[in-house]
Image 1 (tube, helix red, strand yellow):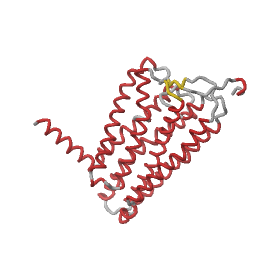
Image 2 (cartoon, rainbow, N blue to C red):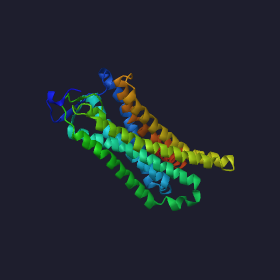
Image 3 (cartoon, rainbow, N blue to C red):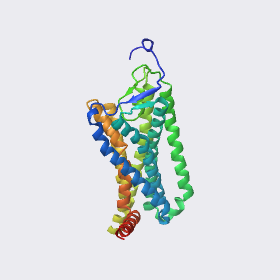
Image 4 (cartoon, one colour):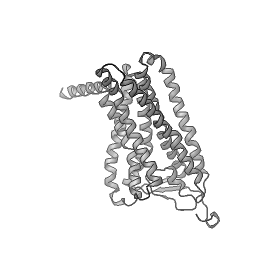
Length: 319
């Protein structure tokens, strides 16, 4: 890196998000499926929240955690996708430095929050299967509220230093950001300062927060599987496994792209940049879109509610 003395530093007032480099001519068309996925995300997660809040029988620990996940999905997608669509359709890539930092904060907070919620849901399944008689005594609404508060507090405490580190950087390069949203290392790489601290803090967050959550989830499911295969009847084993099926699908949709993206950005230099940015866009679109679909299809109470509403609408339309 060139010495800082050779550069003219400036305080970035605005950045210009350029979208997906190399695909500018296709931006209008790329935005169409992105918009459809965003609308599906909004409708699916809002409906899921409405069902859980209004249906008394769903005021159980598992569904309260599902509602937290739906809220985090709405936050993540709404923080990123509207600006993404504005870039693709109207070339409105300009974003102030303060707005960029705000977007960066909420994006990373959403990721850390979702990871912690998935860990809480794994704990819920562990208690439900391994110690069912004490399930309601352990997972009280008071404890769930404290877990929710701890999740939000942890996410804030982990991500706030990241924003502080970026704010302290001196910038002297272009204000063109080849991305569709403000991501920590994407902004940090525009600085002329040494960003080693930023890099290692990002690695520490990935390992100690998301990585540790993934390990604890794997450990929980290891104990769950051990308990399940000790059950005397085949029907009991299948029922226990079915209760975990939707959660496992959501875990895989969250962690597999997360770890692929992490390693690809650091070790996958042979992967074209536009592919990495496209994958980063899909990462904020696909899990939030599919999470409510997975829970609606695999959860009998939610599916029954949706079917009843559809029937009532069909009857009303026919009349």
